[in-house]
Image (cartoon, rainbow, N blue to C red; front, side, top):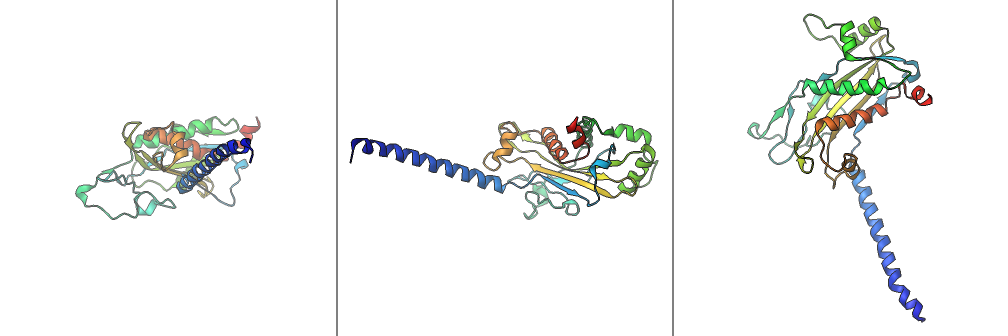
Length: 261
């Protein structure tokens, strides 16, 4: 055996070990990514034609009034009421109920609904081919009734469409808005969940729905998501901004026309 061959063997072993390490790391990252559930869910009706909608009125977004479970003593739980849980399987949903003395609750603030609606209006307003009427314009044109139960979304969409002559009506519900407890470097994470629906004014039918839910995970559980947030724990406001951007990227109305200009 030549001396050159004997000297090359350790280098080959080191290169092989490096490749095995890289494969192992990539496999671990892939496993972690596969464990992270989708944060955005989208549904479209068969009759939905985005190109036919050139104007949208945005109703004031609503904040869920049912109290939400806050952090327990041992871990953080986010619990949406059973009737609005939809397809999301929220963290801790299958855990047994704790005694009332060990539980806290919070309500979704109206300011959260207003902020998310404003972010949606800002994003849609940047699409040149789309005429957008924000919540303040809608409420000025169609003031709420004096008393009695709140009208259904179907009724509101029909009334707003008739008065403002728009091709679509956007409605939103903020279901979860739990603030971060701690600092950016270490915290009980924030959680945000909301849904946005596009209704047809003629009959109030839902043409499109986008839903977002995220309780921020640490680096070991969501590598991409953690670095997406600059490697720290964000506030509920920051998380909701990111959520609106993600959902509205999937909202096709005005996108093709805006891209071609």
